[in-house]
Image (cartoon, rainbow, N blue to C red; front, side, top):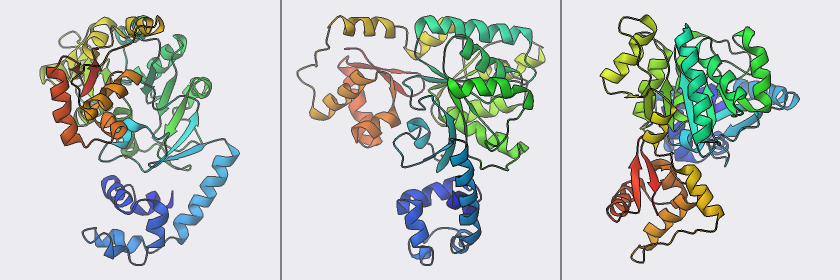
Amino acid sequence: MALTRISNFNFQQALELYRTVGSAQLIYEHRNDIGDIIKDGSPRLKEALKVWDEPMKRAEFELKFMQEHQIRAITLNDDDYPQRLRECADAPIILYYKGNADLNQSKIISIVGTRQCTQYGIDLIRRFVSDLRRHCPEMLIVSGLAYGVDINAHRQALAQGYPTVAVLAHGLDHIYPYHHRDTAAQMLNHGGLLTEFMTQTNADKPNFVRRNRIVAGLSDAVIVIESKSKGGGLITADIAQSYNRAVFAYPGAVGMPCSEGCNNLIRDNVAALISNADDFVRAMGWQDETKRKEALSDGIERNLFPDLSPEESSIVKQLQQTNDLQLNILSVKTGIPIGHLTALLFQLEMKGVIKPLAGGMYHLLM
């Protein structure tokens, strides 16, 4: 908590420092000789890291609030830190979480878009989430609790029995917008509220841009329902693409303000066009998930090809446990560096064992 406060949300520099040293505790212990460890770090940060009194007092205050309100702190080195987010270059080193959803659910999507959602957009969300339930009974739906697309995504997720998590642009001591507090309360029992901000942090404009990277980084895919020519949904889509996530958008009528952003995403090849949940599931390669589980439940086991190397077998084993994994998650689970892993995955593709999917994911065919 104190390190985040000291770094003043310089995400990449704080993350690089954290990974170089190994923990916030070690950074604190080396606060007076930190320059010997991070020779290329900014002089301003090096000086700031020598003064911990105020940040530590603030952290103690925060910890007391968390204990009183059943809020968990999840740090970068924790097992339950979102694995997809961990691999992002600007991942937060600490998250504050209240809820019961698994942030490492096997399938996670983010639904985003304009705050001025039309009835057309609301109907799209309702049909998309409802139809998605038939294909993927296990799914975590993420959004930002804002007006329009966000709140409708959360409410439709709850209506369909999906857990849903809101990423907030402020601390967990209040809810913004206030009118969404009842939905937020329901989500605590079937999803959760997540933020990187301490209490007493207002929902200022820059914080929404910061939280958008978490919305993108948590998920396998981002779906933009409606968007104007400028807006947070487009920012989230761009960030998702930079993270090698799959991005999808619903097209809209030419000239309609709330469709302009989606149409531009499709035109510029940032997002793939979808018109229903079937399109999305097919693009992600998730359409045979139910059949695969039925086959496994009937005792049908996959047989490894006899010519797989030990490293290739370890990849297949991970995909047998949880199919459709992203490259970065496969690297973490197998312990194989990404550069070497990419070559192994290509060999497995040539052998007909796996196939690549949208968003840098890999699907086991055996």
